[in-house]
View 1 (tube, rainbow, N blue to C red):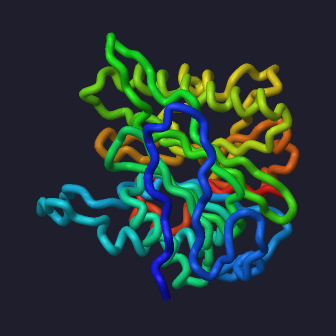
View 2: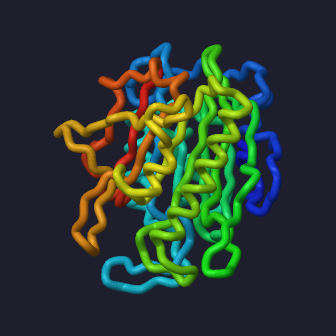
Length: 322
């Protein structure tokens, strides 16, 4: 079978634009035409549902980089096969209809995830890949259903200490039609808490939060009833200035509500920072007012399947929409 097609990274657009997503060759197109894969049953015995299963997952450096493995240093090494397999097993077990992925390298890395999931029986033929000024880490989304359009934010740069910087990982914006409903997915991976040559990491993340909020506001200006899902690795906790800025004013119609997901032990942390022995909640799925009533709160969860820590330093979130 031919290798799946992927979109090139487009990280320097200064104005909004629409891109046509790509699909695997067996899918006819991604602009609303019915494909054979839309009725494919979920893998791993997860029952089919009239709702929508959405997962967000930071897959921890699914890319080529210098690594320290088993006490040895390796230059230009891919993510170890054991870690890759742990990620694929975890995703396939949950059988999402759509998965938003953080921390992938090239478009070929997203295609590799797509192909490995296909081998398990989880067919997600539609994809979109994008990023920001960071040449190493990017964003991607895989979907069982057609991606009908994508968009770029109008503003991607900010000023700090007299210098101009671009948003590191950018903003992924993709609209997906699923079972007669439209969902607009906005994915991010904000600046990490690690030191940066650019400047203070808290300040960088706050600037990125401003850019994200402006993009959200532009969506709501165009459609006050937007069925919006905001997701990703925000690298901050709920009470911080960046997160308050992103979610907005609680009384505002543009407020974004975080799904209160928990794991099987009723715990809410999504990331373990081994270096500092810190457990924290920095990954979220949020919804607009229009979509909030459709969230199945009881079924949505933080995934703590066995072996999650073999896969990534993040735990994935699963959101179910009725």
